[in-house]
Length: 344
Image 1 (cartoon, rainbow, N blue to C red):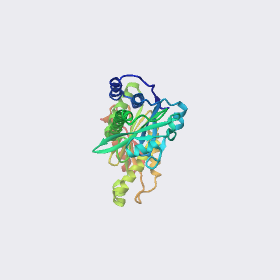
Image 2: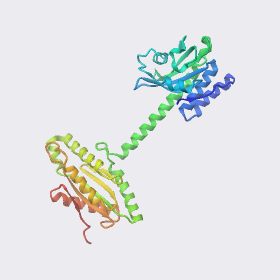
Image 3: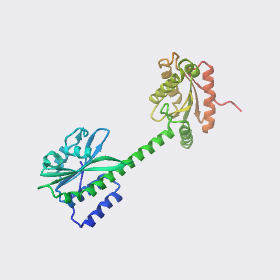
Image 4: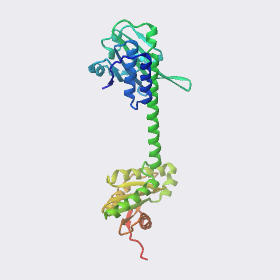
């Protein structure tokens, strides 16, 4: 349900001070827009109003806030679709980026009950180009006020556009930060955690297992004869093999497990609890069932180490798992080997 604000009565200076504060101090876009809309209506004597925001990707105007409109009217008004082609006054003003006087407010459903309307586009300028972000519609119980009066709402529409632009910039910044954070923690080819991330997680899991006195397994997987897959099908085949292996790992582990790409053709499993060997064997079988890539069968050699029997630090566990993985490879691949540390 769109936000709504009552009309206010105040001097022009107080009104515009309130408008500036709405943009500068509000951290909620709907609150800022509702305040600006109410102030615009008060300033030029409108009885009802609404602000719509443009979704350029969907070519649609969505209702954001209203004042003076009954809840059922706002709910029924909905969105304006196909803005680039629609003859709806809201779409026309947004598309032309010019205010539009409407003699029959019945053409703007959200202004039900008003006789006339004035629609202002929300416009900002980027690199010298005017960009429409939506529209502000104001309805009047009688004839349209004089043009000079109507122009009094334009600064408030401009401030609404600034508020929308700022909110979009903040949203984009958050999305970019999230993307960079995800990029820093994941392998771009497989989508799994990368080595830096899994090394840190392994240290945390080993510390937790030590504090709680519980079991923990670490397994390393290496794609068998990976160089042959690449020679037969090129880098594209090699990448496809790695993606398929990663998919099996991600889909077959338990919720408590962590899988990651550890090196070019190596992957790691961190499996809390006593069932790490069972999980690793299931993964090896699942990978062996993959369709050939580049005419070559895809299998993996896996080595597993267990805390605390095979080591009490992440380095000790990785050393044992690496040695066990080499033993699995030497035995022909496509299997899991568990090997205790060498004595002395």
